Length: 302
Image (cartoon, rainbow, N blue to C red; front, side, top):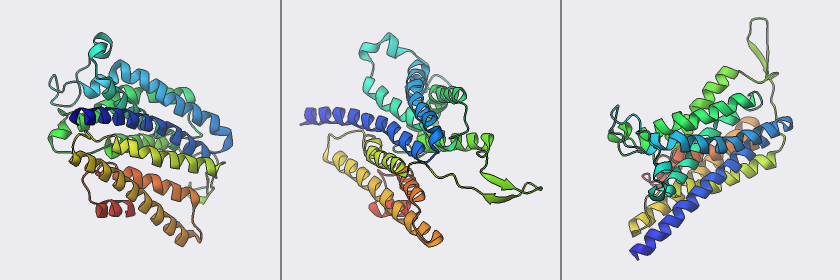
């Protein structure tokens, strides 16, 4: 049974990786649906190249900076660069590489939505390569490598609320601040004060909703696949709790957002409610293995 459990976990680990890869489709649909039709092609290309450029960058250097030994320098700040996946590929842990690769690509793709409709494609490709080559691998090393300095301090992020979503969110905030608003978004008076805000409705709400459903579905692989084992009853129970808490937080966040927009605007706002679902999923990702269902409910509510 122990051998069977090991094999089952190996399969589930790679299925989880495949589900996390499919999040690229979810982000692409969300971002394309919530932007104007003329920019749909740009959005699709950015999400496609996120993964492709990320794969090359992560393979060349990023994976060793994340997974490499911390003992060589700087007290757990960065993994030791190596090219073992080229030099010793027959003994390399490819399952771990694939799982970490799709997480890396998810961190990169978060940014494109915040900078949609006003980003030069070539510049975005440079950013995408750099975040997969250096930024994500180094900070994820702090959090998930056993020798990382945050790990030594007791920091806990089960599946990436901080390592993936906060880093992607901060990068998106910086990018949006540098780019400024889309042309025509604000009317300003002679003193520069905003006097009117124009909304740019997404051109395809069903497409955006499809993206959210895809992401919700894939989050069971994102969080559930982060379990380290299915070999014992305790591990199976933990994986079940992770999936339950993930779903509960997202559902509660969706309900609260719907009620909030209903009370404020007189009717439920579709796009805000869909984004509320994603907010609940992001929020529960760090602690889904440690909190009770009540804790997951409260996280989703907030």
